View 1 (tube, rainbow, N blue to C red):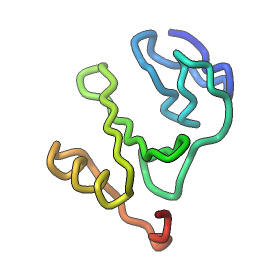
View 2 (tube, helix red, strand yellow; view 1 turned 90 degrees about the horizontal axis):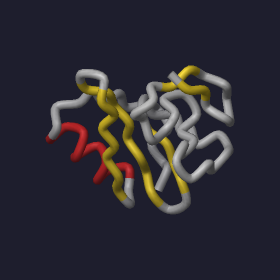
View 3 (cartoon, rainbow, N blue to C red; view 1 turned 120 degrees about the vertical axis):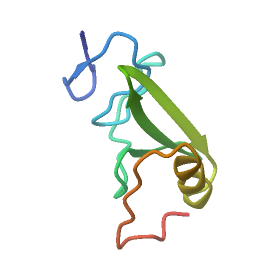
Length: 88
């Protein structure tokens, strides 16, 4: 295990992104990248969906929240819509 340099959460050694704040651990990009959507983070112009399958982190990236929702559904990952949908 390692510790996120941004939020101090324990992170699996193999993970690229912090599951709590969305910090890119390999690029050491500090900050809070959370959105109102479960497992969804925003970095620069991209939306990032982070999920773990059998201890391995899966990262989906898209340029819009609608595209990311579609990718999550196609991969049969959980998606929880929120009342705040105007993120584009």
